[in-house]
Length: 120
Image (cartoon, rainbow, N blue to C red; front, side):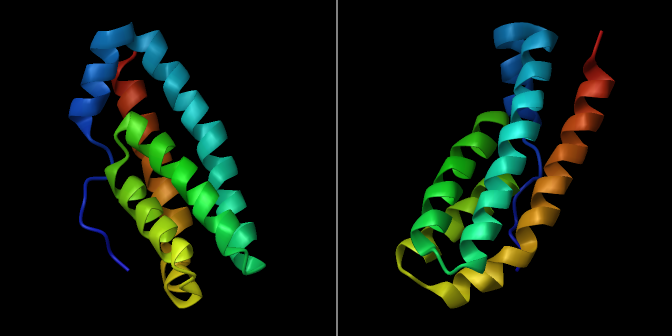
């Protein structure tokens, strides 16, 4: 499944930098890396055991985590996973799941490029 949204909303990153500076952005990126990876793993684990409530709960948390840093594509994917799990649509969850890790990895890579290019 392909979600048409930017991997990283640069305007959000710029707003965060204006709000708290480069150190603040780097801390948010670190937190996203830690917390986002945990949420992705939890979603995959819940889906593997057909725990739709777990998928819904962890996808909801990932929506917020991704949204806070402007990870639009991951945010939309997590929102779709949350919706599918809330309606107990295991087929849709299974269809969306293969996109989750690549979407997370793309954000992590984009954030690394963004912060290395803007640190000073």
